[in-house]
Image 1 (spheres, rainbow, N blue to C red):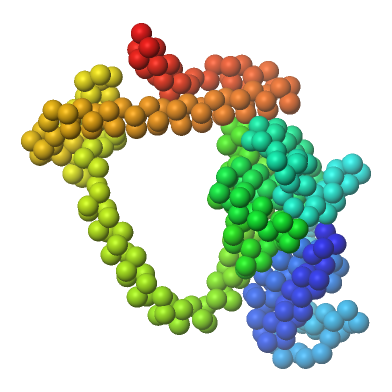
Image 2 (image 1 turned 180 degrees about the vertical axis):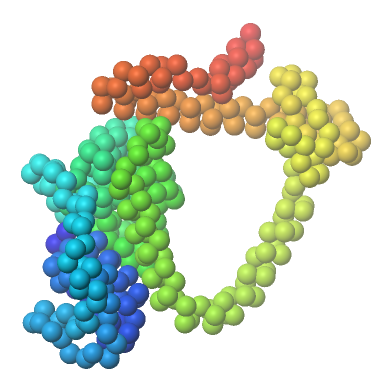
Length: 367
């Protein structure tokens, strides 16, 4: 976590200035961020004083050499008899190997190094590496300081590299790539589309009730709130400048939707504009159309439409089948890893209805 020391010090300076200006909420927010980046006794002392004593506005100056602002003492008697607080998660035991593994992740310079794969690694290699590392660094399994940040970096690395478009864009930066675990306002090009916890649950079928499960989400919400505060002043002026462009884009999108709206819907129930149910002649795939469909589509045109309906239906089945297999495979892997026989039996019995339907259609087409 040494790489985050400067940013943590900057947050402490901002918090100290906020306390001097009678802004304890802002100070607490930046002190909590400093502790997440690089825990220090100085930030911890300030947080404890804010929580227990309250800040005295206009106090000016400091009470010790560390630059901790002066606070007024409150509720001295109640604090003396206050029961000892429960230890936090950071006090739970961890091994030297776990701490060293966290340090290795924090020192990685790019996403490939985090996952331990080559730059030309295929999708299967990325999946195998992610499964191994995600289980190793999940906050429920690794209590070493910084394990949550390492788990987040591993999830971000896989989320970007498993996306062909984002991976291609990421590779263009070469050796100038920033450290993937650092957060900055201009790092949005490689922002993952899914959080590390959601990605983990997608691979392993959920079931982790981590006491640290909300650490990433809370930190991400704080970062977004701070980013909004920085952008608030110039937001209105920027909006006024781009408004004409937004209007053109919206008008263009609406015109495209009106012109190219499909003649059918594959939803399971009637929807706006698609109220008449039909079945394709070949595969008997159900779909919905508008009231004028039978008059506008006949003969060869109707056959082409039904062919498109069946192609879309099969494509949806393939996607759903892949998701079902991934979830079942993740459950089996986690059951074998933890030696959970009940989970293994449940995973074996897990159904894959989309795969079964796809096999049935494939057999009928080749029958």
